[in-house]
Image (tube, rainbow, N blue to C red; front, side, top):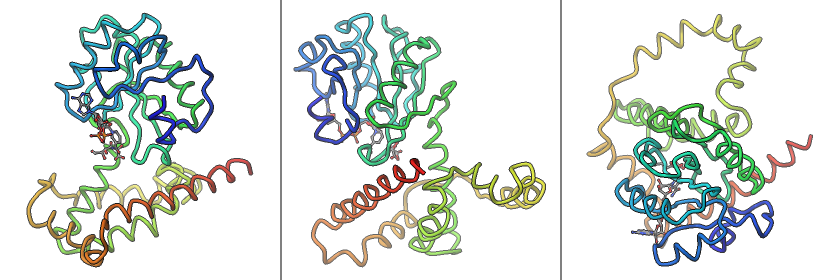
Length: 267
Ligand SMILES: NC(=O)C1=CN([C@@H]2O[C@H](COP(=O)(O)OP(=O)(O)OC[C@H]3O[C@@H](n4cnc5c(N)ncnc54)[C@H](O)[C@@H]3O)[C@@H](O)[C@H]2O)C=CC1
Ligand SMILES: O=C(O)[C@@H](O)C(=O)[C@H](O)[C@@H](O)CO
């Protein structure tokens, strides 16, 4: 709870009994679980480690508590299969940095109770997050499938010498990202024509033609990775802690965008 408060994840107010226990170490497990109704696991993306944590939680947790994993894309089936409390288990995948980006993907195990999904959904809303419900698991869930589609095409465009790493990022930040900060890709398309069906009539053939040119899955290493890394490092080398400074600038932007989005929701 304290760690979550410090991280700013608890935007909303939780009543005393709605304790969230952030489990990141075995030593406080039993204490942290007393009376806990919701446990958010946040250990590194390592299936073996998570399985150990869930096995321990499964033996301590009370029957009404929810066990939730922050995993980016590990399968709920692989993580929760065989647990006594599997019906109380769910993935609640946050987005970096979670204290400014409110999306949380709720991904059930096939045996997750509907009540578990609804309780997790309402708790996430209560603490100011924006949860979405996946109706079934898929590798990478939704955020990372969309993110990796964009990252892989950005990689290919740089690899094929079409555009520089910095300019492909400007295409997103000064182009698509301006709209995607407020509208998703489907509603953006819907508004770009006289509705989504009209968009398909107008642009469907072109979209299919362009998609047919998409290259193979890149191997994320080697000289292209080097070129991209260099592009985002070159003009910051004289700045100490340049990555952290850039993250702080990112967070300042996200904080102001979050405020603007809140204001726009009121209009
Ligand atoms: N970092 C991010 O932006 C995001 C991370 N995630 C997911 O959240 C989970 C955690 O990721 P990060 O916060 O980046 O990891 P991290 O490495 O920054 O933090 C992991 C936490 O687990 C603790 N820990 C490490 N080994 C442990 C062990 N053997 N037993 C108990 N606790 C241990 C560490 O002390 C630390 O507090 C991963 O599953 C990741 O995929 C999901 C979305 C975004
Ligand atoms: O913000 C993100 O991208 C996260 O939600 C993640 O899932 C991971 O950090 C991911 O990007 C790494 O694959």
